[in-house]
Length: 262
Image (tube, rainbow, N blue to C red):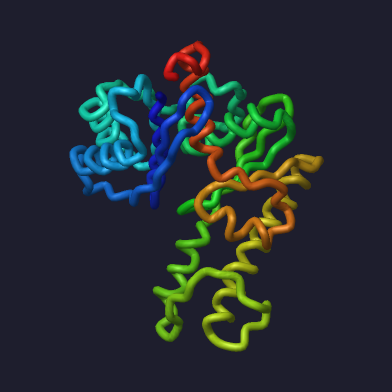
């Protein structure tokens, strides 16, 4: 089995693959203060509750945008799963030509998503990842990673509103019945959700204008389902794109078929 771990700023999503099949996946809170042993116990408990044991893990790969936790998880995988994980970087062969001015600045999650999306669709793409930040990545049919956009995420945008406006309380980020709110809660929900959908559509439109062609727009990330139904530009939601990309990159890096960790 392959252990695939995506360390984001808010959540850590990890899963296990048998071949190219994702058997199970879990979500943990990101906390740089959590130790190797604490994360190790959490992961072992979740794995064993799924009916599997660490001895079944034959390979591991990590994508991290939280440098403080990269070493923690590298150590955790070594201590609790007895494997040396592959760490995603821009130096890897991802099947794309990186046109970014400084490829080392590209977040590893963006690299993984771009590789997975291109492998799956082989066409002009815009990949929108709804996480702590919302990122937009442009990939051409010829396999070029051009770059993209980084915007404040939906969650932190809402948190900033609640933190800076004394009379506005936190509300659940669900779709209101109408754009024109009839109370404070629904007014906030309309502004945050519909406003953010407008941000997504406007950025996609501007990217396509700059590219001179339309692209297939894919959404992924923890908040993708919240916005996808409101943003007219999003054509497909791929909630597990990053984990699938990690499996793909591990297979490419090892130059072997997926059966090596079956």
